[in-house]
Image 1 (cartoon, rainbow, N blue to C red):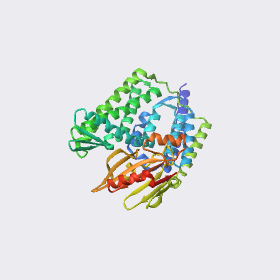
Image 2 (cartoon, helix red, strand yellow):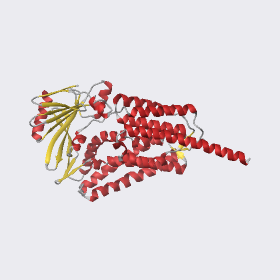
Image 3 (cartoon, rainbow, N blue to C red):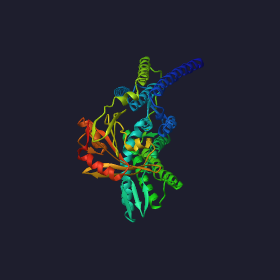
Image 4 (cartoon, rainbow, N blue to C red):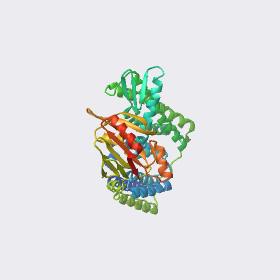
Length: 451
């Protein structure tokens, strides 16, 4: 009997070793594909690094090994989109789908929380927050200004608040988007901590409610932070500016999300499903995973950003007395004696357009003031750029040749429903009066954009 038990233990150890080897090889194959096809910047951003550290804690096995058809479908879908649009972001999701598929097929079914972890680590999260961050920042400025106007003489101009000659700009740090990914990942940690403590898990619906609440905590925390910074006149150069931000994050985001996670898990959590004993992966599953790994690796060699940039068509642009040049990435540059105009074609509705908020920063400029403005019934964005002692005045909007809009939902939905093509138009001058005069000329028909 002892020999039989020893024989069973040896056999199980051998099976476990084969499973570990299979998991290591397939995971290494997926990671190699990621190293080949993805830029280094994808894995050096804070949300990826923090998520990677938390990943071993978040992996919870809750069922028998299986080929997850959802991950398989996602792998094929994102692979097709990556090949079609030559976008790295789709290839990232393809690699993530492959790794999730491998882990479920070899080790067992994973808890749903892993999907939120992967989403928060992905560049999709950063792109969405970049798109939403700017309008939320202006909305926060209006809300903070309205609160301050209840008891103080405060004027609000876009992201700029003026109180008794003191100017305060609500910049990206004040919006707290840099802290949003941290708080969301800490939300994942809090949920998993209570999972393990209470031996209960939440459904997908309750997880969505929880992370929506965490986002709301961030918005309210930043609103309170802005109001207090303006009241006490704490500028970004003051060390208290950052200290106050961290305190708001701890008191109004981290603590509430911890107790909210505990309450939801205790009241609405379902008991842990016992994970089945790990068994050897069937031969046909191993062959399928190996074939998919080769597919992912081969796709990594076809993702070329320069190909995607050169394939974006340029808009037909005509502007009186302007010298034009077509740049890479579907950008048309127009210059006059007193004006600089960029027209950039937006390739697809889901892509993150290169707004002046990003492009000018790469040239060393900073936005000091951003606001909405109306020129001949057209609503546009206007801003002031500074670099040292140099100042530039800029304006931008989106157009399909006839419609002018700054509404993200409007132009993206039109690209989906009506198959309209849109371009970003950015006009910049050294003098604000010159810019306003030229903008009126542009909307009277001096600038022609056809897509």
